[in-house]
Image (cartoon, rainbow, N blue to C red; front, side):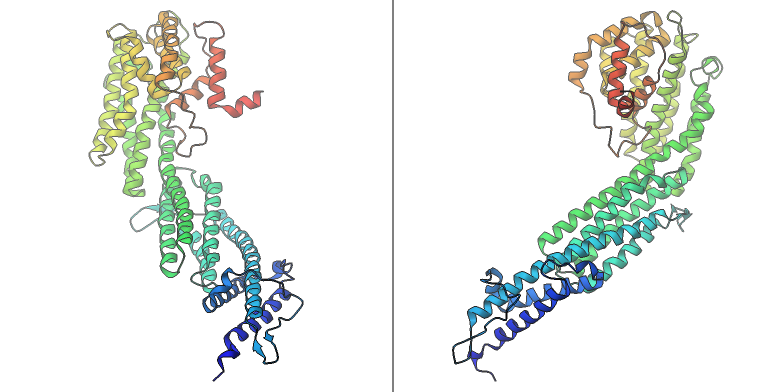
Length: 521
């Protein structure tokens, strides 16, 4: 009904663009958006959504506008949309006003989006702080798994924010993707800062392992729902997946950490009740059936009954992996603590070295047989047992060499031991302590042998310095770290060259207790 030369669509679009853009500029406090902080989150979302809708509509109707830079600004003047006396629409001027409005409003969009994201960061942080600071009581599910309501509370409140944003923005909105990534980032930061407070005892470790695992699964579900419901670009989807994967990885790693940290609370009564008795007189002369090792495995078995109830199959395997490593660390530390207590440089610690070695052999067998029994239902556990128990086999062979019942060269098994410890100073201490227990008169000699191998040991197995900030490093499971802390506290005088111990101690403190070292300086 309108003549083609009237250009109604262009005329109408240019007029609407000019009027609306000026009203928006006035309401947000000018082109710099001085009044944006005064808007509510809902108003910011509406503004972002309207600009996105406007931009999409204009560029669909007039594709050339997307690539045009306006020749002038129209803040203080109305555009001249007509040319000549025929009142024909001036297409050049109309296109220019559309291009200017399109570009100007996109800058407004950026400012509003930044303010909205800043506001979202604060609100999400407040919500997460409240959730994480609440008292989370553990309870059992219908399957008897230990959990708290942390997972449900976090995702319920975060879900409210996400739904509010989704309802206001378009399905294609990049701002929505950025907001979700920001929320994921805030969730990750809060988890990192608060996760350790949930690991207070065995029950809370089990509950945290289950909670964190459920949170990782829930996070994946949230992302999939967003992708299904929205129309993101490939770039936005990639950004969302990377952000989500970082959060999922964190939750999953924290779940495994919690499951493994349970070993600390399982071994508490073991350390209190039987640690001092291992390698003592009664252990050597009276406990002829390896009663202490049996007591250790029975205690572990008692806890296993609870663990099988409290944890799912995957987390249970992680805890059992930790118990294997913790058992080896416990046994080695108990042995080396006796070396610390032994003051003679001439007389062996044991009444009869051969009897003590027999007890050690059978202790190791008792512990290994117990875990081998568990491995029947956990096939992957076999490799863990083989890896962790190798150090005990190595110590047994070194003792045989020390008491002259093996023809193997000490240097061969010192190298094998070093591959496990990966710190030449700890290797020297351990080898020296073994000789101090069974053949103290040759302790200095074996120290010299170990020192002569130092270059070879470092070349074959360089120091591992990745332990310091590694979240996978669960306290009490790394033998090298446990022994380093043990030797840093050691007061025993060793028959070595003057200054050697001080030099090694300085090196170990630098590696294993850097904060202490700084404090001393």
